[in-house]
Image (cartoon, rainbow, N blue to C red; front, side):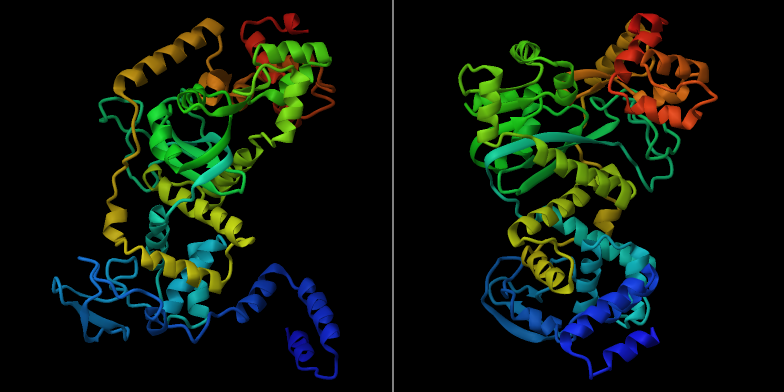
Amino acid sequence: MPYLLFFFHNSSMGRKTKKQRAIELLQQLNQEDLKEVLDAFDVGSPNNSYENVEKLLRKECPNCHSTNHTKKGKNKLGLTRYRCKDCGRTYSILTDTPLENTQYDWNVWVTVLEKMLTNQSIKETRKYLVKNKLVDDIDILTVSAMCNKLRNSFIYMPLPTLSGNVQCDEKHFHESQKGVKDPIDVLDDTGKTRREARERTKSSKYGSMGPEFATICCAVDSSGHSVAKVVSMGRMELEDFEDNIAIHFGDVAFLCTDMNPIYTQYASIHKLSQYVQNSEIHKLIAQCDTAKKKQAAYEQNKLDYIVGAGIMSYDKMCKFRNDNKLTINAVNGYHSGLERYINYIARGVSTKHLQAWVSFYNYRNNFRVDHGYSPSVYEDAEVILIELLKLRIPIRVEDIKYQKDLTKKQPKRYTKKFIAATVAARIKSNNPYIKFSEEDGMWVVDKRTSINLLPEYKRRELAKALKIKPFSPIAVSSADLKKKLLAHPDLEDALYVLANGHTEDYR
């Protein structure tokens, strides 16, 4: 550190040389020292205050929306109090906002939002606030409450109108009751049975079509703008899609989706052209090693196809698809990023709070599309916080703490049928790990669980059947063999065969 200070005070060097030297010295610092240096140059703007922000906001009564008012003193933060001449209510610019009754300065709230935008933890945010003297002291619970209030505000942010080629897909997140002492067993229709706490990575019992999963529907248009909402627990129905996602559609040229029949129903009802892609298209194309096989698979709707563009061969469809940029890659990338955010950055989110996290993630994506970069600095956080205040939505800690899970549940009758159908399929296939996925309406095997529960000799036998070499205990460890098995494209088919004890048939 002394060398760095000496370097910045050395006025004998030219501007370009100083910049180069600074980069070289910063590159030599470890992660902790580098963060300390960067924090020293990022302590917010001392010129910003509630009084300055007050000039940017409309002095509107939150009760009757009148701007006819008189001034009535100031509060402890120095903000002007107003009395509405029409309804008599007293208010300030923070009334009915997440910052109502706050005791912290404007810079504190902006900094908290800035750290949220860069995925900083609550502990790191608290440490930064105290270290840079933005507060004398603040506890973890208070910082957590501030983050929760801000995050829940993004639920009410206006969403964009999607146009052009709109890609749609679902993402499923394991049901969670994080923070609840005695969580309810969602598979019990009486609601009385309690389940034990479980790890986030623990496998479900029956699959994503049931009450064990929250379904998030995501949509991304040609410009990159996105909409994402928690639509139901388990199976998504047409009305869920229409009420939550399709209401944000504008002039849609093509609806690009997987093979979920709900999208096809919607496209048919609204007379939209649709591009449909099988979720296992890459695996299926690899199996079609000739043009004739590809054409045959295409005619059976096993690959990808277009509805509403006339009859065409597979080659002509591919050209039409490429010319019109028909794909579902953008929405797949979007919900993969959402999965990383929820499962690895947030480290799991209670289902009842899931929409707040989804809305925050979605807002950041749309900000990036609109501005060309992701929001990450103090100035960005300040602009966004002013937007939140303009919404005039009161967010209170008590409301968040005692919030009920309002996610749409499946009828009890459906859940019983779903479980019964899954059990029947397991008995029929002699595979206890089979589950039902909404992805293309297919039965799927929990491959990881199947491999982990297989005896070691069965794993070796399976590897031999799949022609994975080496497979002997002398040549490859059990852990490495598991990785090879899970990476093999034909593992699922082989597990079906193995369940019936006919590995020789697979060869």
